[in-house]
Length: 489
Image 1 (spheres, rainbow, N blue to C red):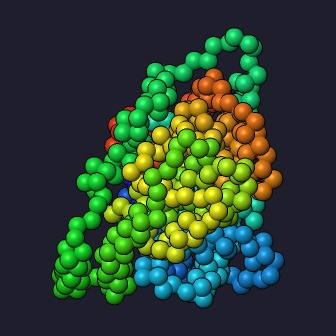
Image 2: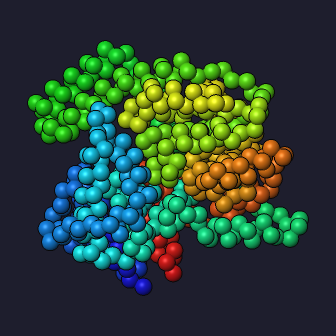
Image 3: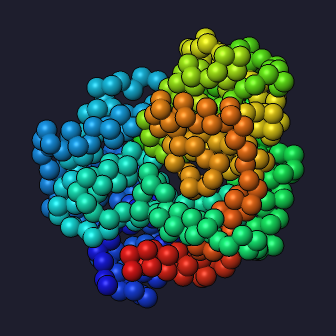
């Protein structure tokens, strides 16, 4: 059946190729693209479609061809229906909080204007479906997603398991894959003694996660470390020199507009702030005792997709830590470790976190901040359980034989050993079960890996994993289009 589609996150060759296959192989109409600056291929193959760059969408600039789209008025019913999304959007705008002066008034006004515009787009184009490459996290795409959810318009996006070379579609990042959940229950109910088979690739993946972290590091982390040469900053004076160089070059030669020049200025200044933030974290962090009972809390980077929006209300990760600090049994500790990438060049910690935010965590009862030099795998191995909003560390923990308290959603949510922790009652029940001697069954983990492999598609949804070369661009486009099409058949 043909569908009229808005295609988000365009501009990547592999993603545009998937759109072309949806049109040519399945007869779908792509009426509107949202994407990066590389739009030539998109416009060549879809000359009748609208192309809205992320830069213009962020600023609510109407793209060419959308002059007839009128921003829709908002009313109490719609704003109330989206009340939970509003909080997440306001937090998500940390991405653009370059100099930490983005006020609540600016954030909420931008949110309302985004709602008006994208509501108008939906009313004008009347799409059957909006396709996202992954969980929407750039503010404007999150508003579009949120409107679709309350209006009953289908959405689709991909999950990328830690198992290399696999992706699978979901209707929402807030929900588990119904197919994988169903197939997993069937696998668990198999006859006693039935052998679970996994491919050599999956078997190697599971064996790798049992090794030290340096050998088990996910490919995207390896890529970042290599690309950014470890990701550390030079001396502050060097950062200042590059700041001045950027401004002179951008003004005289590159002809940057004032907004972009301002962003570059604060990005450089942010590196100095990040150095100070990291130094303060190290002052607060301890060498912890691994021989006492503890829960290991692995923080996500901020601002980042895995924390916001995937973490839901726990995108404010201090809420998660506070909850645990008040619920752990007497004598237990809550060891909190910042993400190893949070202070690197490719992150922007200073936009979301402050000295006070780390001091607040360190002041909580039973809580200790852990040095970044402490191995996360060592913390997993000695812990009673691992805690994350949505991170890869959860899967690593399961494979290494430790249960997980999951405060958001993730591709492994349905796996045995995961305790969904969305409420006080959830946490109390999970901690009690773990304290009573709960053990991970390795066969249940292997069973889940088998089900994910059997119900995923070979492919990639980001340029980093494209570089692994596990599949040709042509096969990737075919598989992504097939996955999208078959999800609705």
